[in-house]
Image (cartoon, rainbow, N blue to C red; front, side, top):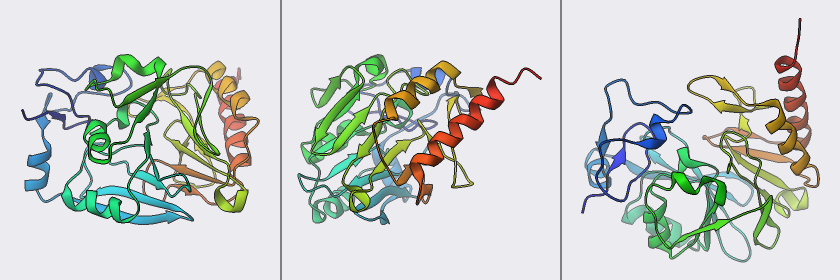
Length: 268
């Protein structure tokens, strides 16, 4: 069976359908030409290929060229206990699988939020790797599979020094990943677009919907900041190529939140 992929968000569904609930949600949108579908074979035939490039110390970017849908890239963390793929893309083929295997394969996958679910089950099966998703986003799983491991609560450790944090920004289950030992133990935060690194790469932003410009609720941002308080990190890796805060990332997140809340709560 050809498993359909939504052209707009790039998420693969388990069976054919007419609608994409992820795009019909107010945080996303149905393409201007209406709901359109593709598949992995069509993407391969159209000339898409895997793209694997270094993004930082011990961190390898994994994407597609040309990009698909939203255009995000994933990140492969070269962890001593086994590589972890943070976030997900739509594209996968035999050559890309071989490149990842040459780097040591994958021991786990974790994804920030539903817009980036991509072809996560294809990747999970290719590398026999579990996919960690927060329980609060269970309803958005487009292709149910036993590879998906739901977790609950505020934090969940998936390997030594690798902690998922349910920031709850953008989606109730929106999660970020903290790597304690990255950057010579200065730490790194992998934020997807939960805390999205903006074009001025000294700041991040927080949105309920990016394409529809719906701001995130101040109480949600305050909760996220409180959860982040125990974690030290120098770099912040966003969701797109080169969207990386290279130093003083912890302070960048704090001052970005302060700026956001100042504007959100300004009564003048």
